[in-house]
Image 1 (tube, rainbow, N blue to C red):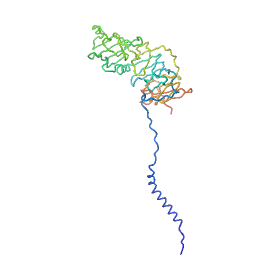
Image 2: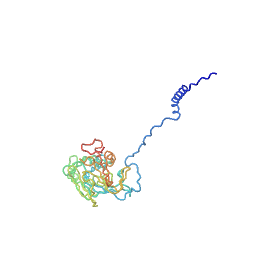
Image 3: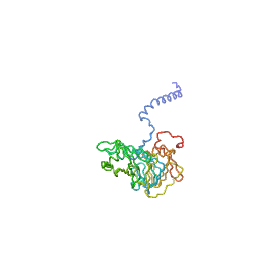
Image 4: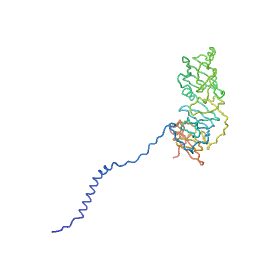
Length: 354
């Protein structure tokens, strides 16, 4: 019997090749048995509730120990998207309705602005909006479709008086302060082109007798004079103040307030700024941010016009701006004006450093 040598080398090559081919053929099947390959995990979806709709817990150490002092200069403080108070200067305090709760910018109904001294203007367009959308915005009001303008030193108000029938009118009035209220004293009333003051006198009527005005909304009549109560006229946030003077200046109805609190002026960290808000002491809440013993100056990125601030959209203004920490841990915040949010930066406007 002849023993032939076994060709080990060729057999090894064939065996190795066969094993590799079988592995490649069977690999997909093995993968299918084990299940699909894992994909990368996506970041969780962050739920951001609309401002003021959901409570955020306050840590015990962040409870407010004092009211927040505030001062504003050259700020158009929006009460809605189109109506604003032109705050030339204001010194006061902001106090939470709930003892110990922070001053919560996410809920403008949760705090009260107590104004010590201030000079605040309102433009005719804001006065129109105030009267039509808030003061007389209820079924069957005695006055509607009001339009307010300024002529010289007088306030001119036109609209519709509803008394059985609709009566168009225009009233020219002097303005003055009267026991904390704005007194509108008509010098001329035109009713369908007729001398309204003479007509009312002839029939023994006055605006007080003729109109059922909404006292709870801050409007009353005394004879033919109309009295406006600033504290009750405005939508939230609630403002406590005392009127001492009112007059026409240019295209503004300017109101001067002094509550006699005698609060010292607050000197901002950056007094060179033209338009600013400064908040000091107490605890501020802005979303998830809590600032204990607050020290924050807020300015606009474009100081060429008043700081246009809308508390309902403050976070949008923050996102479009930037901030800088100060050596003493205070915050210096730059916000974009609310009325500039949809526009590109203006020439010379300050933008976030890249």
